[in-house]
Amino acid sequence: MTLRHILGVDHMVFAVRDLDAAAKDWEGLGFTLSPRGTHSPQMGSGNYTIMFGDDYMELLGILAPTPHNEPVRRWLETREGIERCAFTTDDAAAGVAEVQRRGVAATGPIAFGRPVPMPDGSMSEARFEVFHWPVTLRPGGMRIFACQHFTRDAVWIPELQSHANGATGIARVEVLARDPKAAAGEMAGLIDSTVSTAADGAVAVPTGRGRAEIVFLDRDRLAARHPGISLDGLPEEGAAALVLTTRSLEKAAQALGTAPGATVAVPASRATGAILRFVAED
Image (spheres, rainbow, N blue to C red):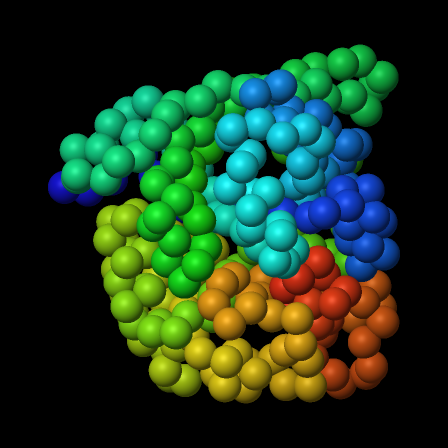
């Protein structure tokens, strides 16, 4: 059975302890951030978003403890960084039913929203429905869920999609795994995708046409992919690097302050727990 309602990576969630401090760090890397948002009370969280074309990044912080955000609070006891990956769904109710028919105890859909100040001074509301794969299913230590957007014009705001570093989208998520092949197979099974092995031995899972791929690899291969970038602060297992496309490597290098000719990247200490790297847009 094919999962008809999973379209690919939607956004990557960075769980952070100090939401406003994290936002300043990312602004310092040349990103335009949305105004701070506050989710519905049952979520107990707030966020900033960094918007691209079809996808985005989310900085997520806990504002009040609730049953829903308990897994994030536990995770933040040990580290900050990419805590989970969201996939786009065009129908959350149908999507969770598809997954459940496969024998997976997915939960949802859950409806929520957040107020959004618009560039013209008016207020709008971003509304979503999400469903979750069980928290016990974490390929390479990364949780996954799916998100349906009902109000794209309140999220993909043109003024928020222009970044000083030229960023245009998420090309790749790199996940450290004790057994990369097994983790990739688990992810492919959960989203009904395929597995391929790269020339360096890393294992890739495509997520949808025009969307980011998720790559599982060991520490040595991660280091080889990002020469000169420290691996300090990265987990033994979990999402470790985010590769973004940019219209201009020169602008990205200038925003990051990298040396001429060096890899256009920063270590986890500057990007809230994950290596951040830029590559030229095709």
